[in-house]
Image (cartoon, rainbow, N blue to C red; front, top):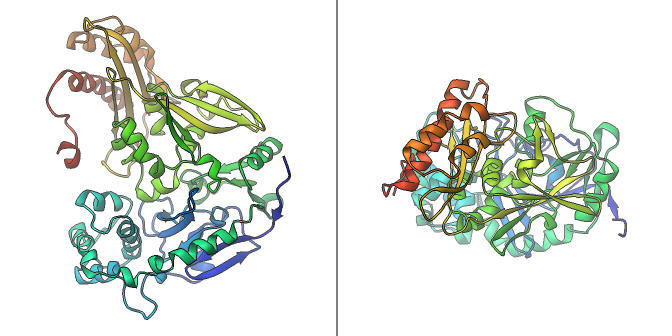
Length: 494
């Protein structure tokens, strides 16, 4: 492999200005840089953990096909090193060049969508991203777009009315991002020089690999480096725990990790694919995964966070691993030029420990699509429905024999142990038995053999144990009853 050209500067576009930076800390957030270095104070800090949306900006990036997509992201946990070759858009750039308010802004004014105003720029940016994607959005699309934006004074109804009214203002001719899209694509292409970005030294060092092979070689040589894809987890290591994460390798821009393919009944997903990018394919192939993904953080988090990262960090409450384990997913792990494939359930060894060798990284996850006769469901239990961390999550895949007995069942939980973990004792109690209420009630007693959950801020051990048992009963009732599932969302109920 030919060594990549090394560039010692970060290059991107801020609003309408080309930016070149030669002195950037690996853990410097976009929010701090905007407010302190550029005095762009419209972007606010509320929670510093990607929950409240006050820091929402748009980041435009070239797609592998050569298009340009703009997504709302949380500037408070987005690191500067991840922006090479991107277009960053803040609320100051939304109005027309003559100062006329953008339709999104004007609608918020006319429909009284703001009181104290602190959260308003974030709402404007989230609605702006939605408006570009869906000029006449449904109520469900509006509510989904605003999952990651919190307002504590106006109330959401005026904001929803504003969102519904945006397109009535017209405005496509006044929209800067639409008017400048073709020119911006060319500007961003010019920034993509194929070089590796390498900046700083020692505790201030970070690298943006030129391509996937460059990343593999780099990590094999420096296995202790912190790999950052979406930074929805690592960002909090910095903003909340003040951890030293250097040296850092930023991989969000690696197109080779962005592939999604469906072949021979398996969905293969590159480790750099975000939740938003995977949503359409996974929802179509495995419908139960759609509502799960839609409840992972807010839209900003889903635009940044990756499925590969959710697996790689080994969190016991990661939302996707239990569902993927129940589906029988496998991982491709890579170190240098060498690859190996393992079952996802074998990847998790203990809390903070995964089957990943020094210099090895998750390259792709392969998810079998359930067969037509199989039943699959996943349930996420939280204190609030949207944008909340999991207390307990259960995933179930069931195959019944012709006589109604359980031919095969796979049950996996998150939040019940130090890692995402299968319920082997429960599975054994159900396999070969009639799929009826008596069998299920008997199997529920076996949960104590599989799990000894902990009490923490999310839930007590007793609550988790009860919920885990009840989720099995819910799965049984939903697979044996013609009644509509007892969902919380009115959209799912409809």
